[in-house]
Amino acid sequence: MRAVALAIAISLPLPALAHPHVWIDTGVEVLFDAGGRAEALRITWVYDDFYSMVLVEERGLDADHDGNATAAETAALQGFDMNWDTGFSGDTYLLSGETPVPLGPPEDWTAKFEGGRLTSTHLRRIDPALPLEQPLRVQAYDPSFYNAYTIALPPTFTPALPQGCKAELLAPDATAANEQLLAALAEYGADQDVEADFPAVGANFADELVVTCGAE
Image (cartoon, helix red, strand yellow):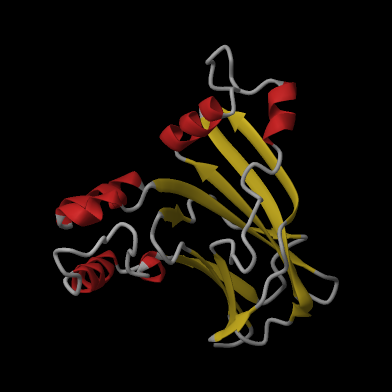
């Protein structure tokens, strides 16, 4: 993930170097009901070392600086990234084919600090449960590209991937994404604050989990 971000940074003009600010390794678990319909997603976020260190120090945790939280510190971390503004997507997007599917608010969250990195998880319900008549697509991205998400953890399926279904991870076309970003930045004037109004290019850099069932 960082190699990709570095390649992006090298290719961009100076004003764009401020994006992204945070790198997040992401995991996606799809939960199915007894009928094989998707009923929830559990999302895992593993924050980069630097952001983890800053956030932990701001909260006065990890007093012994060993990169791990005590039981009391772990309890204090719960929900640290779950105070979402109204309407926030959670940087997770679900589609059935090409049709967006709403996700419920985050719940059942967890957090820990181990090995110098913060990890959190949260559940997003799908109501009603989604039959897999069209490919199920899960995308992870921040439209503003402030956060850079990579689906770096192996996808999991609970209780199991339904029979006759397959899952694949699709990576973005980095060259095309960079070209689109450069084109968007070229529209800004010299007196405009790019950082304050960064173009909504995050989707171009999005990893995607696709679950397809039945004959293609």
